[in-house]
Length: 221
Image (cartoon, rainbow, N blue to C red; front, side):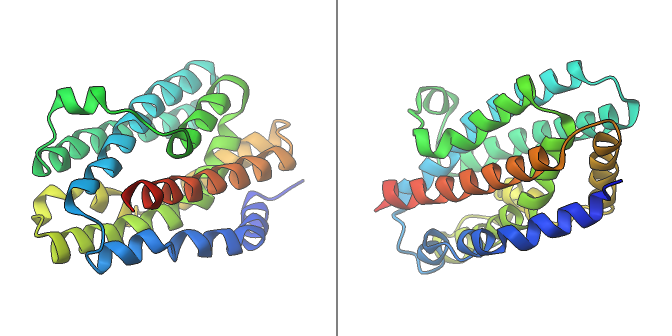
């Protein structure tokens, strides 16, 4: 029987070079040096607004397909967290003087949205274990970048700390979250989810994470 922790450890080792490319992304370095024009910060908010709107629907759909109580509880907590983050994103938008009309009219880029499109695919055709495995592998890189971005917005762009709560939400470690996600993955493995599907989901999501930062750098040049 496959052990979830051993599987995730193996996936992390395989994807470490990709993770390093994300956490050492030149977009973050440019932010920390104040080289991203202030008006271009709106791109991050616009893309994330579209991503979270979609992710809320995707997670809700996956909940409706799930019959395992423990996994349903995890997905519901994930949905609640995304909803909290969505509200915090609007706080950051207000700090950048972006109103709701601007957010709704923002034209997203395909590269930045590939992440959320894959999540929609998992919601329809995948399993909670695949989504959980992909998130668990992705969270450290996403969280690290959010932490760096939060610090850079304050130090280089004069944005108040209480308006970067969206970034802080993901940057701050959540207690026991890894063990909770590992139990969801293990339940999936025990009920027939193949390890290759979890590995593929993690590799794809991490690749789409890199594409998100690449797209911001290109659009901000």
